[in-house]
Length: 392
Image (cartoon, rainbow, N blue to C red; front, side, top):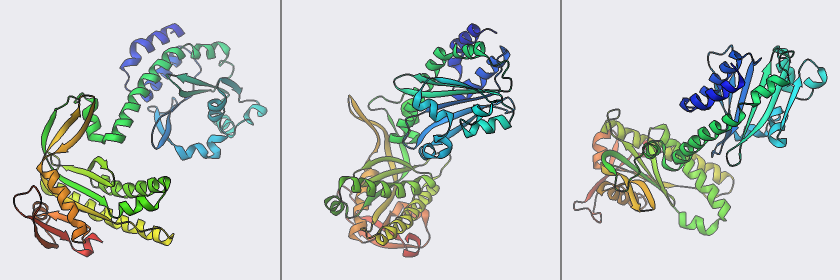
């Protein structure tokens, strides 16, 4: 198979491959079929992501399939990366070829010694710029330096124009998925990507609703700098969010210092399970926040506390908003109830309050707090709280 045939295959068939891992594996098979002395390939892509720096796809013929390795931002500061050919290529651009049979060549990077010990004799690496500022690096190792000549390297480079297009396509899709999941949550992001984006489009769902609010937020805003306030809010929301995620909840939105969550009831989760998980998320969040607050006090910082409310009801889940600015959220009477219930956490000095609908399904050692008139609700709201031993 000629280099032209590989490029044609990439343009014709590459679009049917769902990701770079699958593409790398298929492309390596094409190269070897065409006689290229390719024995190890690493395709690294730097990504726009709130936590990850990027990822690398590694292929070797001994592997059942190519593997994808996530690269964390902290990995970029390690000696392993800073003293690697990948870092050299990212910072300087261009490409280089190394004959790993020569001690002077192996001495350039520690990983070259490792490659040589594994029987690789030649290395080729090149930075690939794609799209609008995207950066990728392709590195290839061969166990046959005598066959890995300039003609083979030019043959590898022949597919780069098509490869750039594919990387740009995959990374654009990956970026869209990452951004949507980061800002909308996993379930809502899938709905948006699947085309559920029309204003007014939605559905009625049953869910346990979970609302937390940071106490003393107004005082914090007046006593902290902008940078300090952002750090406090990130620490607080991290604590709340990890508890929610660990119990299967989905964060719908952040509203100032408040966070609205749903534990959807469906074929996989009953109403009782949803309520159990919502209450468990509340107790976990409060326990973790208590530990965070103790750490802050030990550092001479202000403690943190929050109030959490859990209610069960039917809500409308879908798109609302203006014609050019939509929001995927939940609406309905149950949302109003959980909001009113949350305000009672401060009034009753209880960090976790449950509505009667939730308490009935959860059962256990719950303390009745009484019935309270709620604005917009015809009947007084019967309220329960977990005992101190449960809520921490």
